[in-house]
Image (cartoon, rainbow, N blue to C red; front, side):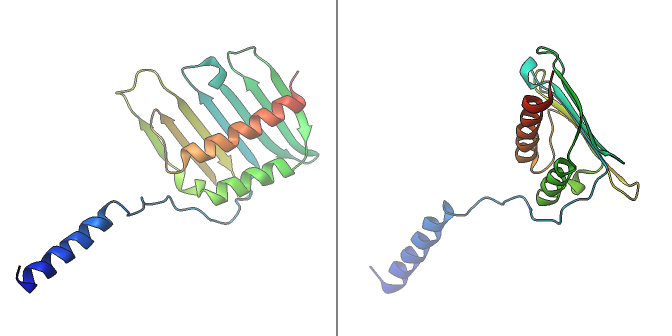
Length: 161
């Protein structure tokens, strides 16, 4: 084999060897915590266990929690709780850049049985962040919704009647 052919084969092999090792693009994370006075998240799914709403509103006396199982048992949590819960959600919103979800409103009509969400956040200056999806979701949605569900479960265990 001629030297130029060997060099060409070696270069081609090196290029091909790297093709499968590229890492997928990671969603951007790492924003500042989002200061909020109200947070509302509504989620439905094909399973009734996945249908719930969570609303937190900062008031003069603390944070008002209203959470509800929508179809599976109908438990409700309606209580005044520590402001730290809204701060925790603010950190979550900042970490996953939920502010970039504002205006998201998509519907995947090809999926007949899946899940929907509606998110509404109000900031102290009156600005809002609103997003809605029906079987269509913004960047980082899976991580954010999993953390919201964990928080919801914790709150229901502590405050639901």
